Length: 123
View 1 (cartoon, rainbow, N blue to C red):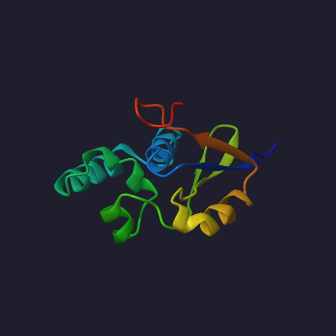
View 2: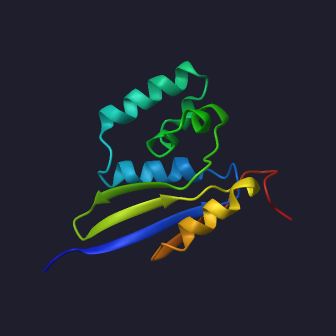
């Protein structure tokens, strides 16, 4: 029996950690090797953004890396023992809502990332 294809979109408010979470998921799922993560870690540290190494799995544009926010949807394909997975990281900044809608309309499933640090969004 062949593997099923699963498209997952990750979305949420800007600065909630979407690209970092998605990049880490892709790494843990085998879509990116440790050497690549180490390369991104080094490059990110050189720019004073060491915590962004997993985000750079998806944030390919220079402007995205410099600003620290995704501008367009980013796609990454990887394979698990059960699925062919396409992960979509949708931008969360209000200036890029059209791009977020494009990403979410293509998904089979969605993951909403909500920042939970003190001072973030609690009532």
